[in-house]
Length: 637
Image (cartoon, rainbow, N blue to C red):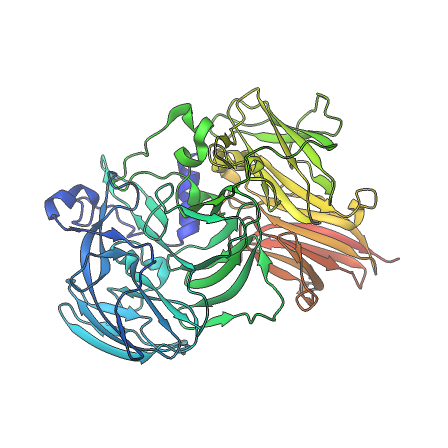
């Protein structure tokens, strides 16, 4: 990706960058002066041990804020000086010490500020709380006593900054890691969950007189591949609590499985869905800044799986903290792209089983031949790639353009064999996003699979056969999982539709709305809708039922809004599915025709036009800018 486009992507992802003026000299917080400062080392907190002492219904906890040296990448990689929390007398931690109690507990906290600036502390209050809960102000060198009752069960957090009116996207530098989890457990509830605190860090160190934009997106104080690996057995109940106290939106995607969302909340309140309520099953959960959610997941297949942010720019390797380029593995990423070229908010999860590691069973399968090709109009910096499809499996020539990618229509319960042939000048791989496949076929080169059976990247001229049987009908995605920012921008993605019957599938009443990134920097202020900046108009008839399948496969726009308008006003549609999973009846309701989507999410709606005339589908960005539109001509019966 061209550097200017990467910078625009990162600015869009983090919303706010540090001070606008380049600095002539480096501040004491920068990496190059750490050895001179001789500050203490910051430990990484895996959030498995709660802080404080519990006695007769009261948790007593003594915390302090200090300055320390933090290494979000490898311990031998460059570090940076940040402000962080610690239990008094113990090492600094990022994220801050875990505060975890049962409902009804009194929390008695002593907070000391050992920084040179005041501390504005949020989150030490009972739940639920009012929207305007004021922070506790702790002057430099001062101590504050705080006591409150924990309140309602939920997934919460505390955080601090050195200025009073700061919001999360503005905590980009030294204050960015002043956060910690605050968990209130329901009486009798299991406490075997893992707590994942997501933060971000941004700076602009000067290298050779030029400021370099440097960013990190992290889980529990580390960036992939240095994040903790989680291990479970087939059949275990995996419980995770996830909180985003950084400045960007993170659509969190689990490979190969659905998970059940048990709660959604923020610092002040949490909505916990009761056991008897309709399930909230997804494989991608959009997590805005300052929000939380909890999940459960029961893995049924062994192997290595990723749980990661699907804003692809967040998972690309970035410059080192001192502004120097990230070490390049050369061509080795073609073998082990996941470990060598990915970074950011990613957790690797290994699911164990005593069964032998073998590919999927041999059976009669429908065969498809998917070819990754060089398209017309690309350059070395901004390549143009695409997919073509050969239903018969023979090598049939295809002519450009190869955008959008062909829609793959599969049948529920019908085994399929898809051979991916790579005719690109670089390695690639295909991930079947949302499809419940065996790990070996998941498409994460160098990581997916188990034991000695690890998925390879597909070298130029090579092939790979993916075998699976779709267990459900729905809207899914196939896309590259090698050098994703470059190859997704080039055009390597497409819609994957699973239907109950291919013979009954009617594309005239089943519309795919695939949103992707333009191939050229010059078009970055817009999005591609079904491969074009100006998609052709569609036709509908009054009173007939249409299925609209929305897919956000943009690399860095997690706030897209899809809207269907009639005479400038929202129409109505009925929600059908999320991430390929049909909604229960109490969620499949009629409502205004607008939905906000994160990267990697899919939504299905049913639309029945009531009046003739022109309707318009709009795609707008998080700030409201019109990024694409398409006319829909509705005619009378």
